[in-house]
Image 1 (cartoon, rainbow, N blue to C red):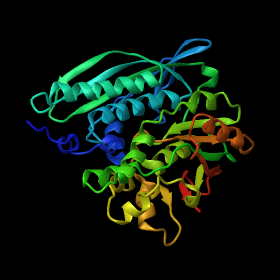
Image 2: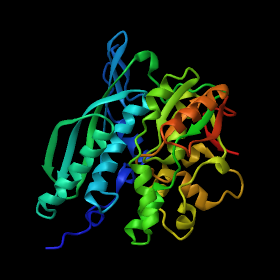
Image 3: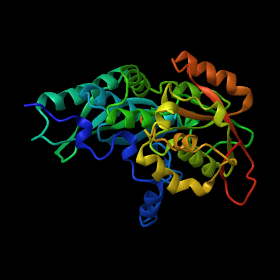
Image 4: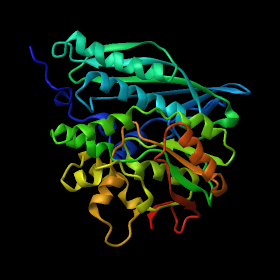
Length: 349
């Protein structure tokens, strides 16, 4: 019996499945705030990439989880992308991953054991590339296919990098081109070429291994990774956390090859619009800003690049670290400054 396409079984795919930022904020406002132990170095206060718990003077545990529905139809590729994306949050804190646990929800009456096994094998391949084992996990029978990891790592608190510690005058560097959401939308409609698919897999399965080396670079002040809320959403989190305006040079933002043309052809995800609805009032666009560029600014990234705020004099070293790890598309895309108004904003100039 022919199995259905993985993406046909899901109402959304990849990090585009995330609850819209405005809705999420409303939910979290209703969540009771509990006492925070002194050992909890990073919690939920700035929407950072992972929780961090201090174990000793020079060691802390980094803990995170990420899972989603299929963004591609190939089961092995789906597993690789989901695992790479989950492990990225450890790197974004400056940590080194040590192990992971699998989170698996599958429609077992629809997908064969071979297909489900291939998803898990893809996740194991990504974990092996990161040098860690998948040491266990949990499975359920689910209506939609879901796969991801709990990822654990270690970091020296002296080298911990949060998303909220940028400084006025810092420059902003992005480690990967954007446009994964556009590519996934074209794929779901059967209009992505083989070359486009290859580019999509190459970027979404490229581990963010520069993270720990970047965290040890003295001029790096803040770091996060760009995922479901798009470049604008995660840049805003950095701006809010630091109480600064973030000025973005759109012309300098690297785009994955072909995504602007696909976006102009209508291959834009619904998540892009939901992202804009959630935070658009905090973004100052110049007059006449292209609506397609706005959609790309909010395009949900799956396993996106690291976003780094560093002193201007450290920019060369940061770009060299990215390059040494095979992230040759890294680019300086903006700067941080004292807020021009009452609240931090993302400003495009």
